[in-house]
Image 1 (cartoon, rainbow over the protein chains, first blue to last red):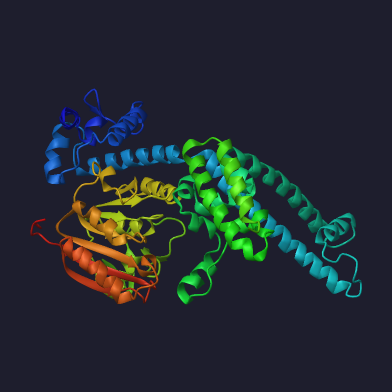
Image 2 (cartoon, rainbow over the protein chains, first blue to last red):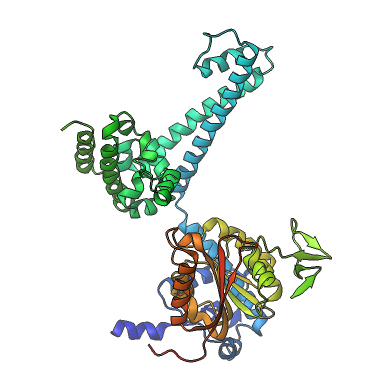
Length: 299
Length: 204
């Protein structure tokens, strides 16, 4: 009770903090950054008065000598709120997490570019050599390599670029693995760093991932078929991104639903540990791993 | 508001990339729900008003409103969009960017004065609820404009059902004289609800 009363006494209007030695502040002054900081602290501690109507506030702010009229008041408020927003932006950005999310997106985009370009090269080759059947069947990579080596080939430069893209992809994928093992240690242990990173990128942040029910995580990335299920009552999808985990992909067809359900259940627990505790929990990983491998076996 | 040859124009500063007609920016109803509202139903009294705009996004609508209004408080919670909003606020001194979640108005209560117009343009499942939470910022007899994106409220229910549900909610919150305006001509799947905050005190 006393605490509440004390808080009431401490409360101020935001503009009362913009005064230094009786002089109004401007964004160019030295004390500006510390003023913004002070306002943020007051805001986060709920130590600021809510604003009355301007007609009542006018006497207040003008009499205190902070602003001379409404126009100045609004300009000051704009400068303060820009300052607050910039600080908040910097504060709320989790650099490791953002790096991982965007690296994964770049990785997938690179993969797509590589396969699209390679396919076009293959089309070109097949169109020109329709009779050479056995050569490079189902191995576009070696076709690209051969063309890259042949300096006279009109596509050899492009083929070299594709090879370079392959190199970039290797580097990016290594980075993604390292990042994922760092910021999603438990999930990475269960379903591999790449799949965990893709789940994170789809969910948007670790916090969103931790808030998610297991059923949502299970079908994350299976949006279209989920919505056909909801609108026209087809069978629901069994798995989304987690299909890329080999335990699900290689499970027998009739067990896939069960494996992905169990995996999703364990993954959300892992996601919560990753978000809140942020350290690998060996005991949990062993237990969860056993449950997942049990799900793929006949009883 | 300024009309010329059936186009809604905006008198403010022209930035690169803006479409211009007779020396003024075109306020395109296909890109801005407020403009669509002006074209279909009528103009809200934005001239020299103070406006609280929830869900400002990158601030294209806000920039037009700020040409007419005295001040626009623009609330947005997506970091990417807030960047654009801040850049806009540097250009136009009467835009006040607020980087907060509109579900928790107590966070920006100290900075926003009572306003003449409240615009809610956040497409979320609880979009009506968000508007009602921010109702304390609206002056009595102030205008309340709620843009409903019907797809955001689930796909199981019919359009009329959803609108009625929201209507009931905001009537209970003390909004009267509500017009339901269909924006399908310019913005498919959107409905605008435009009412006035009752001056009678509601007894809870």
